[in-house]
Image 1 (tube, rainbow, N blue to C red):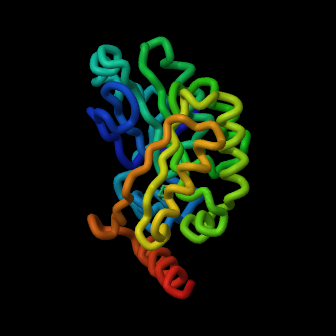
Image 2 (cartoon, rainbow, N blue to C red):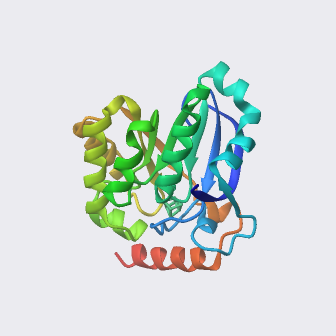
Length: 229
Ligand code: SF4
């Protein structure tokens, strides 16, 4: 049986991750290094409250909200970090508990090998894709990731599951997006064929809560780079 390292299980969420009442399962590990990461403690082992779960153990924890999920059309959303690093666990979990009538969502950056997406995409009811930026230079500056990988996976997912199942999130990030650049991102996604496009102002979590030393250094590095541009 596969296992997953989870740092938070956030229950009774409404109007945040799709329809109905949902529980967000936040797993450890992420391939990106976003300058204003919402959850930088998932990057490494420094987070103290990580717990390892098998599928059965996770089900035992989540089933407390079974009635809410079934009555409202909600369910479980896998987030992170990057949940697709745990694609084998997610596939196993859904196969085992699909008959409960829960919906299964995935909140992802798509910055993973193609096979991670292929392995779970037919099992997922809805996708929340964090796009960060549709401009290669800005994307790579902000995330330290590979834009071409993200872009090709985004096109692939759209082709395979269709726009109805995907919500693309378009953050407006202070410092990264000058004036109207975020509108270019939304327009590009619309031209690609996406119909659920969620533009929202992104608040730097460093202003709200404690972040790791690595995240602080990463953020400082980003700010210096955008100042020198
Ligand atoms: S995708 Fe970016 S914001 Fe999300 S956990 Fe990874 S580094 Fe943080």
